[in-house]
Image 1 (cartoon, rainbow, N blue to C red):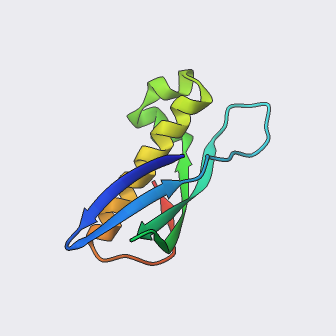
Image 2: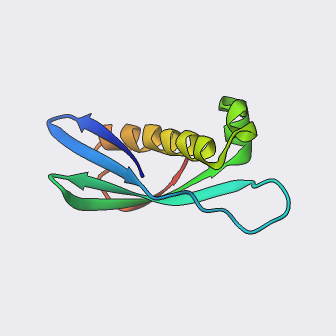
Length: 100
Protein backbone atom coordinates (compact mmCIF):
# COMPACT_ATOMS: atom_id res chain seq x y z
CA UNK A 1 0.00 0.00 0.00
CA UNK A 2 1.23 3.47 -0.84
CA UNK A 3 0.74 6.24 1.70
CA UNK A 4 1.48 9.94 2.01
CA UNK A 5 1.00 12.47 4.78
CA UNK A 6 -0.52 15.79 3.73
CA UNK A 7 -0.77 18.93 5.85
CA UNK A 8 -3.54 21.30 4.76
CA UNK A 9 -3.89 24.36 6.95
CA UNK A 10 -4.05 23.16 10.54
CA UNK A 11 -5.14 19.63 9.59
CA UNK A 12 -2.98 16.58 8.90
CA UNK A 13 -4.26 13.83 6.63
CA UNK A 14 -2.91 10.44 5.69
CA UNK A 15 -3.61 9.21 2.15
CA UNK A 16 -3.75 5.42 1.81
CA UNK A 17 -4.04 3.98 -1.70
CA UNK A 18 -5.35 0.57 -2.72
CA UNK A 19 -3.51 -1.34 -5.45
CA UNK A 20 -4.41 -0.07 -8.93
CA UNK A 21 -6.81 -2.12 -11.04
CA UNK A 22 -7.11 -2.31 -14.80
CA UNK A 23 -9.48 -3.95 -17.23
CA UNK A 24 -8.58 -7.38 -18.55
CA UNK A 25 -7.00 -7.01 -21.94
CA UNK A 26 -4.25 -8.46 -24.08
CA UNK A 27 -3.33 -4.94 -25.21
CA UNK A 28 -1.52 -2.27 -23.24
CA UNK A 29 -3.52 -0.95 -20.30
CA UNK A 30 -5.06 2.45 -20.94
CA UNK A 31 -6.53 3.30 -17.53
CA UNK A 32 -5.77 2.51 -13.91
CA UNK A 33 -8.37 2.90 -11.18
CA UNK A 34 -8.12 2.66 -7.40
CA UNK A 35 -9.48 4.11 -4.18
CA UNK A 36 -7.56 6.36 -1.83
CA UNK A 37 -8.72 6.66 1.76
CA UNK A 38 -8.26 10.11 3.28
CA UNK A 39 -7.68 9.63 7.00
CA UNK A 40 -7.53 12.18 9.78
CA UNK A 41 -6.55 11.00 13.25
CA UNK A 42 -6.82 7.41 12.02
CA UNK A 43 -10.46 7.77 10.93
CA UNK A 44 -11.50 7.69 7.29
CA UNK A 45 -13.00 11.09 6.44
CA UNK A 46 -13.28 10.62 2.67
CA UNK A 47 -12.73 8.13 -0.11
CA UNK A 48 -11.35 9.37 -3.39
CA UNK A 49 -11.96 7.13 -6.40
CA UNK A 50 -8.99 7.81 -8.68
CA UNK A 51 -8.40 7.25 -12.37
CA UNK A 52 -5.09 7.75 -14.15
CA UNK A 53 -4.82 7.37 -17.92
CA UNK A 54 -1.98 5.89 -19.94
CA UNK A 55 -1.49 9.09 -21.96
CA UNK A 56 -0.90 11.07 -18.76
CA UNK A 57 1.58 8.50 -17.46
CA UNK A 58 3.34 8.41 -20.82
CA UNK A 59 3.65 12.21 -20.87
CA UNK A 60 4.94 12.57 -17.30
CA UNK A 61 6.69 9.28 -16.49
CA UNK A 62 7.26 7.27 -19.70
CA UNK A 63 9.84 5.05 -18.00
CA UNK A 64 7.13 3.60 -15.73
CA UNK A 65 5.38 2.01 -18.70
CA UNK A 66 8.49 -0.06 -19.38
CA UNK A 67 8.82 -1.14 -15.76
CA UNK A 68 7.08 -3.58 -13.48
CA UNK A 69 3.55 -3.42 -12.09
CA UNK A 70 5.08 -1.98 -8.90
CA UNK A 71 6.70 0.82 -10.93
CA UNK A 72 3.37 1.74 -12.50
CA UNK A 73 1.58 1.54 -9.15
CA UNK A 74 4.09 3.91 -7.54
CA UNK A 75 3.69 6.45 -10.36
CA UNK A 76 -0.11 6.40 -10.57
CA UNK A 77 -0.41 6.61 -6.77
CA UNK A 78 1.93 9.61 -6.61
CA UNK A 79 0.03 11.35 -9.42
CA UNK A 80 -3.26 10.81 -7.57
CA UNK A 81 -1.76 11.91 -4.24
CA UNK A 82 -0.59 15.17 -5.84
CA UNK A 83 -4.09 15.88 -7.17
CA UNK A 84 -5.77 14.97 -3.87
CA UNK A 85 -3.31 17.15 -1.91
CA UNK A 86 -4.27 20.13 -4.11
CA UNK A 87 -7.93 19.55 -3.29
CA UNK A 88 -7.29 19.16 0.44
CA UNK A 89 -5.38 22.44 0.43
CA UNK A 90 -8.53 24.04 -1.06
CA UNK A 91 -10.75 22.49 1.63
CA UNK A 92 -12.12 19.61 -0.46
CA UNK A 93 -12.50 16.96 2.24
CA UNK A 94 -15.29 14.83 0.85
CA UNK A 95 -15.81 11.73 -1.27
CA UNK A 96 -15.02 12.46 -4.91
CA UNK A 97 -13.85 11.18 -8.26
CA UNK A 98 -10.28 12.23 -9.04
CA UNK A 99 -8.84 12.23 -12.54
CA UNK A 100 -5.08 12.60 -12.31
